[in-house]
Image (cartoon, rainbow, N blue to C red; front, side):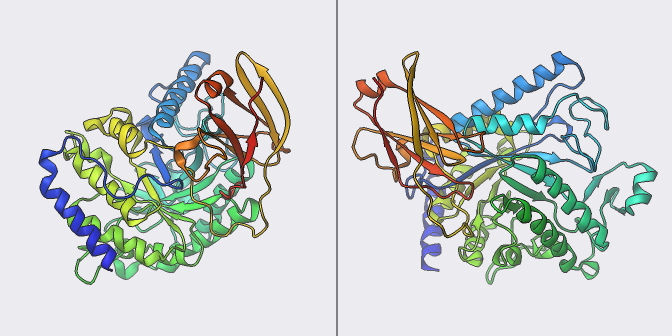
Length: 470
C-alpha cells in the first residue's frame, strides 16, 4: 500500500508541473527487459487495415504492402505484440470451416479474397520478431444478421444489436471451436478475447457471471490442449470493481458479469489487458488495484485509450498518456496495449515519436508464462558459419526462437535490454534458423556477439558466444 501511495503522490506532483514539460518525460525505472508492448490492429470496417477493398492481384498486393508498412513502423516503435482482429462480428479474416469471411478485404461479407490474411500476418510479424495474438470478438454479432443465422444460433437482440446467448451451452462450444480452429491451423502466439461479457444496459439481475466463465473455461481448455504455450488473454472493462475509497460508478468488470480477476487467479487467463481508457483518479487507483488483486498470478498490461489524444475525440494532451505509462512501469505492471494502431500511425500529439525516443528506447521480450515446463532450456546449437555480402551468418538449431545480443563487453550481458539486436523465429521443426550480423560493424566497434534460445513459453537459455566470422 505504501508503494501505491508514493507512486500516486509522484503522479499528482507531475500533474501539477505538466504544463511546463514538452513532451512529458518518463519517470521511475528504466525500461525493463521483459515487458509486453502491444497494439490492437482493427480490421472492423478496415479502420486500421486494410484501407483498400476488392479482389484481384493488384488489390491483394496493396493490402499486403500496407500491412508490411504498418508492421515495419510498429517494429520501430518497439511494439512486440500485435493483437490482430481475427473474428470480427460473426465473421473472420481467414478461410474458416465455421464462419464466413468478413467483408473488410473484398467489400462483401462471405466473399473469399483469394488469399489468407491471417497466415500472411503471422509470417510477417514473426519475420520482425513480433508475436501475433488472434483477437476474437466473442459475443457481439453486429447490428444486422440474416433471419436464418438469427434462428439457427438463437441470437439475443439487445439495444439494436445481436449477441450470442451465453445461457446456451452451444455458445461456449461454438466459441471454443473457433479457438480450436485457429490454434490448430495457425502458428499464433496467443488468443485474445474481446467483449467476453454481458452488453451495456443488460440488467444485473439477469446476469449470470458463471455462464460467461463457462465460455472462458471451455475455450481455455480447447487452446491449451492443442498448444499449451499459446497465451490466453482478454480485455475486460478497465475497472475490476469498486474500491474502498473510490467508486467505479457502475461501470466495472463486475457490473457486466466479467469475473476477470477470478479467471486470472484460477489460471484461466495468462494475460489481462483491462481497457483503462480513463485519466486522473479514474485511472491510477484502478491500475494499482489490478496489480494488487492479481497478486502476480498473471500478467496485467492495461489497454491505453490513445484515441483520446485526437482533437476529434477528447483532445487529451500527450502528457496524459505519458504519465499513465510511466506510472504503469513504476508500479511494475506487465506492459501496455494501445487502442488502436491508427493513432500510433498518425503520431497523434507526437506519441509515436515519444515512444521511440523515450519510453521504448531499448527492445523488450515478453515476460515468460508462469506455467512453463520445469525442465531446463538448453543453449542453442551452432551448426554452421558462413559469410555473405559482408554479413556473417550463423546457423543455429534447437529452439523455435532465438535472441541475438551484441555488446562492447565480454561476456555479453544478456540482462541488459540495450544489448538485444533482434528476435529470430524458426520455421522448421528442428528449429534451424540463420542469424546474420554485419561483421564490419562488429569489428569497427569492438562488439561481441551471443545468442540465446527462446522457447514458446518465453523462457530464455544461457547465452552461446558467437565468434566473429572472417
